[in-house]
Image 1 (tube, rainbow, N blue to C red):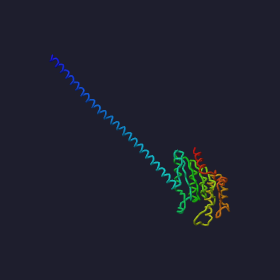
Image 2 (cartoon, rainbow, N blue to C red):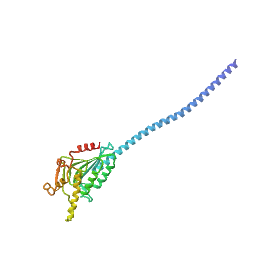
Image 3 (tube, rainbow, N blue to C red):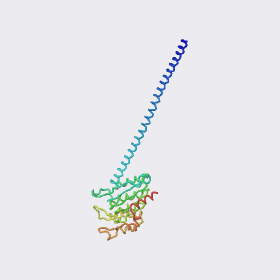
Image 4 (spheres, rainbow, N blue to C red):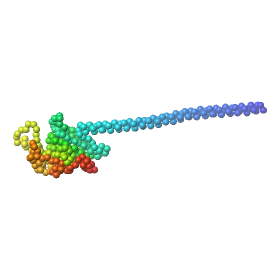
Length: 289
């Protein structure tokens, strides 16, 4: 009996030992599995966290880049306004942008004007007009005029360039569009003048030494014919009427010519309509449709 109990006890102990060994092996396997998969999950979580952090950094960097580009674009526009009197309007709509060009002071020619004079340099304007023609994002050109005139060759060159643009063009005469400013005013597809704006039509003049010979007067007449021919072909005034106004006496104190103020310029056929910047902007947008 004692032996039977002993043998039963031994079998129970052996069985318990085997169970403990199995439990230890299972626990070891579970521990290893937990360590392995737990490390992978931790790495994934860290990776996701780093990814989100990198994404936030990228968003911040992109936002900073956009702000920097915007500031640079604004700085460039400000420089163009202060340096050349030019800017681009309606910039949020590519293909419908309006280039604003100011022609002010004296039209400077092949020689530099006096340092105390405000001028428009043709070597700045001509390349800009070529760029406007080539730029697909620009849909039209608006010109602000306040000029006393200047070099005939340079003024006519700018006027011819404006007239040859394929894009809609509108001019607005503000203070004045005198002398060679008249061809510039009429060179666009449509023109405006403010009620107080003035235009002076007068004969060609020449500064410096002049040789008193028939050839000189013939040369003057040819230059004048170029101007009157251009104006007549781009406005509603006949060439004979322009020459008549050029040689009119009594209106100018020290010169021949005619002064046209606001509505007078429209009645004579030089300008299409009396109006200001609102009317000019509305018209250029209509022409771009």
